[in-house]
Image 1 (cartoon, rainbow, N blue to C red):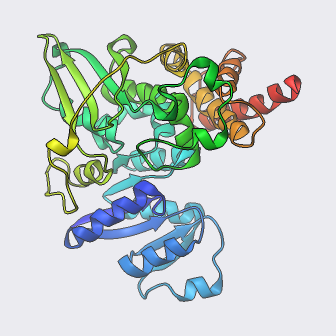
Image 2: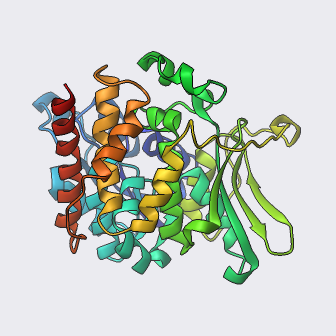
Length: 377
């Protein structure tokens, strides 16, 4: 019986994790579920799955608490986070954004297997992540794909590693067109249904640039050995080019429950218990170069990876405020990367020596973005 904690259980990855758990219910002891708010969804998850703990960061109503099943204890905030992590053998960290950094740190510090779906923590906790690689199974489709491909390979056999990107809603738009896109346009992702922040990051390809940094930290890769290719069908999730001229692809339908299932059972494989597509359904497969003049986030993130130190944390904070300002209509689409670049060029911070330093650098970058906007305004 696998003792599992699910952090961010009401989000997309968290909810789909629980779908897999329900399909293989006899294999899991659900230690706890955690979300930001005492929502109806969190309550329904608790009622259906009866975890030992249910936790969130706001105070639930008496009525909400009264509906919890017998044997399920409510714990608020960090008390709940610690209890879920300590009671679990493996922890799915599906919390989005910078709120997921502390849970990654605690799970690894306490020696748990981390099913990692929070990119900010994998980017910002670089040295800590590298020291604890053997405890991490990446969940996001791209890194899960590379994880599976590279299990059977030696480092000297690898020539190049490719991450695939759908190209987002603006793959066929010109640079001139991008000056005039609206928030609504940017939120129309052609393949995946995601939250607003990650959807905008996919439109700028900042998401893919950050995934390059993640891959470097997870797989001990050099920046020059990594690249991104546009793959509109989004069914090839990772590619490794070998020194003998061959390529190994990891391909599957666009369903996050596939990498989630793999991460929950690694190193075993289990039958996919949901509707599946045939090989012919996945055709055709095409690839295109990334236009780095249009999508400047890719070379910018490679530069951040080369710089290391405090820069990844600043990148995360800078992108957070830039996307927020775009969603509020206060800056244009192309200004997102411009603002991130300007914040990165303003850095005068020391390299972080602790978790607190990392969080402080993120906060500095966020505030710097607001400061720069006021100066321009």
